[in-house]
Amino acid sequence: MKEGSAFIGRQSRAASFAARLPLAGKIGLALVIFWLLIALVGPLLAPYPIGSFVTDDVFDGASAKHWLGSDYLGRDVLSRLLSGARYTVGLALGAAILAVVTGTSLALFAAVSQGWVDEVLSRFMDTLISIPSKIFSLVMVAAFGSSLPLLLLIAAFTYVPGNYRIARSLAVNLNQMDYVQVARARGERRIYVAISEILPNMIHPLLADFGLRFMFVVLLLSGLSFLGLGVQPPNADLGSLVRENISGLPEGALAILVPAVAIATITVGANLLIDSLPGRGRPLPAER
Amino acid sequence: MASIVTNAPERRASGWTAALRLILVRIGYALLTLLLVSIVVFVISGLLPGDAAQEMLGQSATPAAVAALRHEYGLDLPAHVRYLSWIKGIFGGDAGHSIVANMPVSEIIADRLPNSLVLAGLTTAVAVPLALLIGILSAVKRGSKTDRALNVATLSMVAVPEFLVATLAVLIFAVHLRLLPSIAMVSKDATWGQFLRSYALPVMSLAMVVIAQMARMTRAAVIDQLNKPYVEMAALKGVRPRRIVLYHVLPNAVGPIANAIALSLSYLLGGAIIVETIFNYPGLASLMVNAVTSRDMALLQTCAMIFCGAYLLLVLIADVVAILANPRLRAQ
Picture: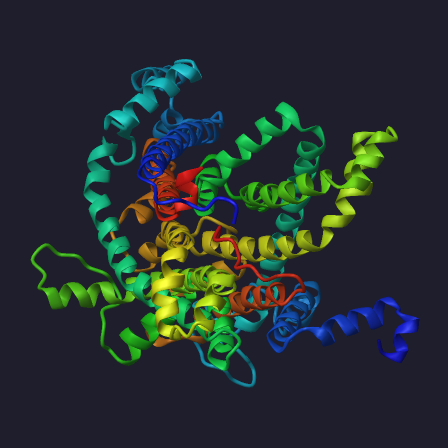
């Protein structure tokens, strides 16, 4: 214990958490924080308006005026990247939160209800989990379309079953614990048992799972956008930026490399961070 | 371990019947799941009010014309009747009619499926040996510098989008070095050299993520065994490390490793969607993307069912290998 730990405040706790991470974890944390900040304030930093044509040279290299060059229509890549990051990170955060909240609520409900409720819900989730996630989302995009709210819902729905499975196995184990049995015996209601007794004890693995879902959604949505089935023009997330500049590939244009590398730094960062969280020794599930 | 298998013949016989029963149960379970999956796919893709008939004739079609076309394709029947005839068709080989291509779906699939199988087969042939090598090496040398470097490398690779791998590969090998073609053309009379050259980039892009995933899971499975007391025992009585790994650890890790291989290969199904599209490869996955863009539901449903079936088959194979490889599971 350090001397200062008597005054553990939120900040020093966060700082000591970061300090205890291994190097890879620190890099991951830095990348994640960087991209969250970009998503928050990025469009304010953009040197040019998003859709404006600022130069006659398409697929220009880096220059003092355009740090990351220009795209296939002569727009500023840096500006488009800063606003695209907001879509990628924002949609993924929203979808991951929705997926984890839904999956975990259903899992808690199943665990405290037991019996046929648990049986039916788990059967249903097992069915959904055996549809590969990209295939599942493609079917949903074909059926429902791909407006921004729909994309968020589709991505969330795709990853609910995975979260449900993990949350349920945690909750079922906790449900057998003595203190939960005691709470039941003294006549607490199911919802109290679920939220006050079980949920607080599964927060840590759930947070790791949340990070994982976030990473999966970033990959899924940018993949869909890359195929032209995700975020639709005039909006553009990072995947759309890769798609629209694909004609610059033969000349190795920055406009196609930058957004692709940006996506990779988000997901790799998230993955490095999750993997170095305390209590994680297992390989990640292959749901991607 | 409580349940140690004895070598008495009658025990072994009952072990094999038990294993057989277990395998049959798994097969039944997989079939049931496939049936449930088909219901989910059918319900989702049939949920929306707008249907193919409307789509085909456009906004200006008269209601009578739409109704007639609907009747022709059986779209006016109640949902459960349509589902039953659809599922019967899928399992019977007649998957309906692609409205956009105006061809039977089964013909289009028959054209594309072999291409996808070739791509998947080549990727597997490249990925499995490499991944096993990396996984086992880093497990044996766990904690070392090599292991830590491999860990960060594979951890990063599983999180990289496949279009980045593909674009980088094209940029390096096709644009700068001019070694390989950037479009995977498969002509029937290609020589072996041409064949391999045209497949190099797609296979490389697909294999990267698969190798990383598979190596990580293999490493975990082998380390799991290396930590068991019997390994310590073998080391104490002086068995050499190579022999411990090859003769003691690996036979015990076959089940988990088969599981790792199957699960990582199932990733091929999703990864192929991006890679086939980038390289313009005429496979099943790019066909499915086209079906989504043109909202060709009959084609989409069939592609989705083939992918789900392939996934379930992989998981089933992993289960069966695990049962056959583990005497304790057999004896249960």
